[in-house]
Length: 74
Image 1 (cartoon, rainbow, N blue to C red):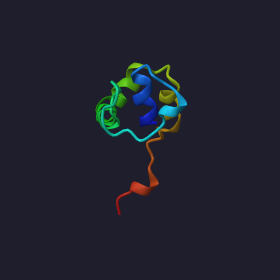
Image 2 (cartoon, helix red, strand yellow; image 1 turned 60 degrees about the vertical axis):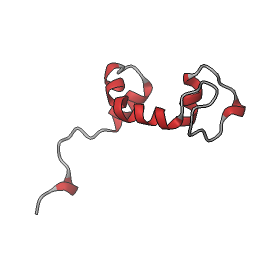
Image 3 (cartoon, rainbow, N blue to C red; image 1 turned 90 degrees about the vertical axis):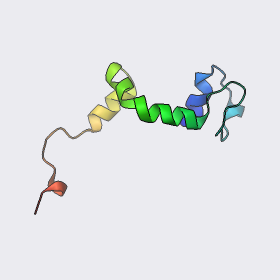
């Protein structure tokens, strides 16, 4: 996913570009830089864009019941 996003963010996308990219190359964002950015801003981004499919998937998977059997104190 990071590889695809780093390629798409530069506006250059072709099947031949799917390769491991750890450092900046030809103006593309490096995977390391993108991973640091996503780690910091991913949930803020999903909160600002509730219409995105990834946001809806995450929200549908969240347990909102408030009861967590595995975390009961003994």
